[in-house]
Each structure stands twice: as structure tokens, then as C-alpha cells.
Amino acid sequence: MALALTPLSVPGDAGRLIAGLGDRAELHDLYDPTGSPVYHDLSVRDTHEVRELIAQVRRTPGDVLELAAGSGRLTLPLLALGRSVTALELSEGMLGLLAERLAESPARLRERCTPVHGDMSSFALGRRFDVIVLGTTTISLLDAAGRAGLYAAVREHLAPGGRFLLSTAEIAERADSGAQTDAEAVFEVTGAGGSDYRMHEYWPAGAETRTVTIFPAPIPDSGPVTVCTTTVGVLPADRLATELEQAGLSVLARHPLPAGGSRHHDVLLEAGVTA
Ligand SMILES: C[S@@+](CC[C@H](N)C(=O)[O-])C[C@H]1O[C@@H](n2cnc3c(N)ncnc32)[C@H](O)[C@@H]1O
Image 1: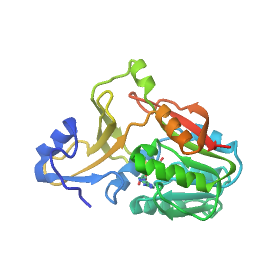
Image 2: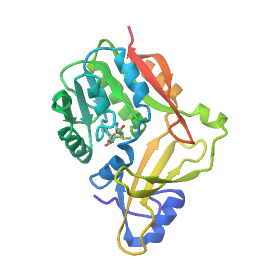
Image 3: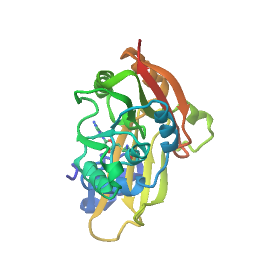
């Protein structure tokens, strides 16, 4: 479904570009049925945080609940560990892409995966898991109420001694890194299917949100132009750790992740239910 389009829907140069396209621009959420294949094309070969996440999951045997599984970027490596994985995802478009990937996967993997349509901020699966995973800094899609719901649901679903592994941006490092700190960065990227994209990341220093907007590259001179966007909260690890503690989930370790780009580093938080 196209979003209501106004020049103010997207900030910065990306917003001005959209305004300049006028009614040729078709603006979509990055995870809606039109945006999902674009996200998938850009992420399917991205190995960011996979090795570190898998290393941590390996330390806690048992069944895995993966939240916001998307099209399976992390799901397939989790299945390859030999675990049973319940893959919860809100977007029907993403679940469709996950189903396609599972259908192409060996039966020994596919048979251990249970895709579930659900909301990570409010779910009741009627069982507990040894490991709950929320990767790719996806917690940043939830507001405070959503995160409170997430923590409560995680507590309800974590087995005794289980681990909740979630990644977030390590904002403190950004100021010290000497990396580019312009409000907006533009990247040219090629998807796994060979399509070229122009990606704008709008993130003024100190801002509470970050907006990623993706155009085809080059932008065609005529006809409709599909533009996909997502705005996420900026959630420093310290703030999340405090929220987790308040929700009865103790942070047991912080595992550094390689730089996710020139503008921020990420960290994998390992939490367990407070004794
Ligand atoms: C950054 S993508 C990560 C997907 C996948 N884990 C990966 O690494 O590629 C975020 C995912 O969260 C999903 N999502 C957004 N809000 C959600 C919610 N409330 N509950 C479950 N999934 C949600 C989106 O549809 C999208 O697939």
C-alpha cells in the first residue's frame, strides 16, 4: 500500500528528491509487500552479525525463537546449527519471501522451521524457548510501549537459564570514531539480484530517529519511481540495558559487532531472566 505522500514524509535530501518527483514517486514502507523484495534484495547476502550471533546461540543448547525474522537472513544460519527455529514476523510480504527460501532449502533445514505471523511486542506462543533472538538492530522499530510489551513477552517465553540475544547500535562510539557525521549520507548499492539502488540515511547528530530511504539508481527520467523508506529509533545499548533490567531481564554480557557501516557500530546484548 502506498503511504500518504507529502514532501515532509521523508526528511532531508531524500525528501526533496521525492518532492521533485511529484506524483511519479510511489512511497512505500520498506517492509510492506512492495518494500519487502527490495529489503530482501539488499540484505540476503549481508553477513553482518551472523557469525557473532551464531557463536552466542551455540553456547546455549535448545530451541530458538527468532523475532522479526524477515526473509530469513538469520533464520537459515540458525537452522544450519541444527536447531529448531520458530521464526516470528509481522510482515506478510517478508513471510512470503521466507517461505520461498525455505522451499528452496534442504528438507532437513525446512522441517525444523516454524514460521509464525505475529507481533514481537505482543505474542503468546504457549511455550518456552532456550534462546530468543532479535537481530539486525530491529528493536529500534519499536516505541517505548512496544519495547515494554516485547520484554514482558520475552520473559514469558524464555526457559530457565535461557538467553535473550538482541543487537542495537553502540552510539557512544560514533562520536569518537572520526567517521562521517553529516546529517545525511548517500550510498550506491547493488542488490543480490543485480539491481542498483541509491540509499539515503538521514541521521543528524543526537537525533532520536534515523530514516533510511531507497531509490532505484539511476532514477528513471519518466514513469513511476518506487521509493522505500523506514524510520527507526536510535537506541543506545546503555538505555536498552536499563530498560531490560527494569523489566526483570539482566544483561549478562555485551558482545561487540563489526561496524555495520561508516556511521555506527553495533553491539549484541546477552540477557537472561533476573534470578
Ligand atoms: C531490519 S529487518 C530484519 C529482518 C531479518 N531479521 C534480517 O536480519 O534480515 C526488520 C524486520 O522486522 C519486521 N517487523 C517490524 N515490526 C515488527 C513487529 N512488531 N513484530 C515482528 N516483526 C516486525 C519487519 O517486517 C522486518 O522484516
